[in-house]
Each structure stands twice: as C-alpha cells, then as structure tokens.
Image 1 (spheres, helix red, strand yellow):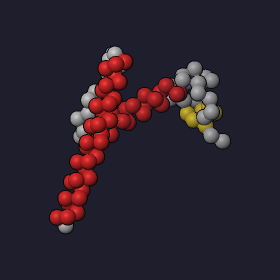
Image 2 (cartoon, rainbow, N blue to C red):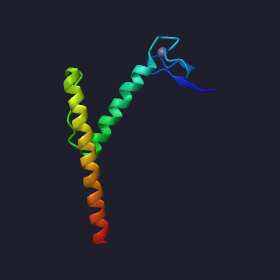
Image 3 (tube, rainbow, N blue to C red):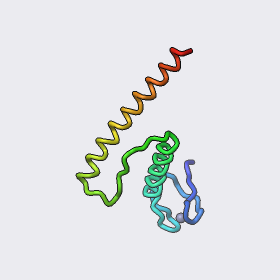
Length: 91
Ligand SMILES: [Zn+2]
C-alpha cells in the first residue's frame, strides 16, 4: 500500500492519485515547488552565485540564462576538481 498524507487537509490517500480526494489539492504542483526550493537551498549551501531565473523573464531571457547557468555549473565543477586535486597533491 502506497499512501501519502495530504499537506493541506491531512487526509491519507492513494499515492497514485495526483489530486486529494478530500480537498482537491494537486500534489504534483506542490512537489514541483518543493523541488525548486530544494534546488535553491542546494545552491545556497554550495555558495554558488548562480544567475537567477525569474518567472517574469521572457522565454528568450530564460533560455539564455539557462545556458549561462549550465556553464556556471561546469565552471564550478572544474574549480572543485582542481581544488580537490591540489589538496590531494599537497597531501
Ligand atoms: Zn487534502
């Protein structure tokens, strides 16, 4: 039995159902939001000054910002690898 608790009304319902049968809360939406918060928290903890994508940005702005974000991640991964290797070499 795979059940989940509704975050709105506390009712236990089937995990396969995406909408609470009691209060009609859509779980998929709240989980997406949760995922976004987790990503933002991870970025804060890693202290990566990532470029921010806002909901109000135009699709073109979002597209270019995503490309910049991707390169930022690659850049920081390389920095991390270099500092790791430097620490390993220093013993
Ligand atoms: Zn509910």
